[in-house]
Image (cartoon, rainbow, N blue to C red; front, side):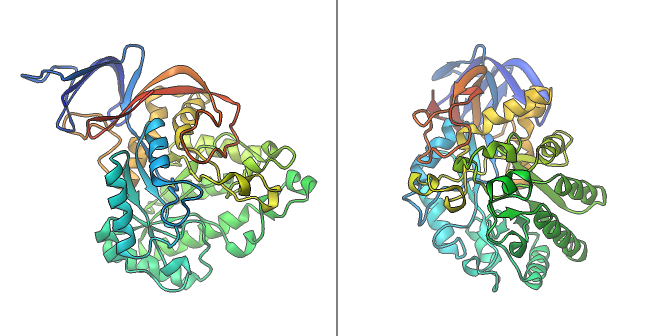
Length: 424
């Protein structure tokens, strides 16, 4: 169907565009911005008066829970949540059951996602067999099956020689490793940041240097191998500084931060609020502020949802026994807007951390509004406030520390491949 999006404020971070323009879509791609393509006759007109027309959001970390954890969430519910949040492309970590360590599993996941015809799903392959940390997977075959990168998800890789070999292998073929840096021995049994709050509450702690030691180790191996490494969900001020220095050195590295870590700190744990049990833990206010600044100055490349739906029974247990994780697909846009407003950034720069910048890390043509590009778009009201509640979330998991909070940004329409897949 030919679609005409009229009267909208078109914001494209990749080009710096921020102007009132019409967008014309045909055969799944953008055929015109501003000027009407020759012979164009719309089958549908979407009035975007007072709304922002932006590229669909690109999320670098969203657990879809299939295969193996359907009791927490299903592919259908979570992809429905994605498009309700304006997310049109997402990367899913390999810690499913079984893990994404074989081509057949990756192909099955991609086939199931295509059958739902919602957001684009980009699997991240397991770095080691069964995420066991001992034997490398067949990365070439996994890449041919559709994996965009390779990761251990949140499973620590204690054998540095295995990581070294993985970087050598990845460098040979030009693959990217996505690492969530944390020393597994230092973080063992920890559930909270090693600070005053954990001490007061008697919670086992994870020190900041559990992250920075892992970053330093990875950077040393990057210098030796030239491998491309993306650091996922950094949580410390020192981690941001190490990434800043590595980039200045010219190393092929990048990094992201979760949306909730850009807003919350250890003080939000209150009195054992298990909704704030996440990995890595919320750290000090100084760390949070450094993450916000690092995202604004480009040290951190992207903001991700770190979407991890958890069933209610395991989330409502005592803090230390509860399962870590927070749902976030539907909150990525509102939390990005809240961050951008707090940092006094132009809307185009704010949206860049959830569109073109993560798309470049993903190696995707998504995240841009330009003639010839896929028509993956998010149309939203930047001024509308939305109260987060279990009743409004589409995700099967309602586990978010932002329950009851009002956030800016209501998605009105999401298009994927030129098809309207969500209207709200």
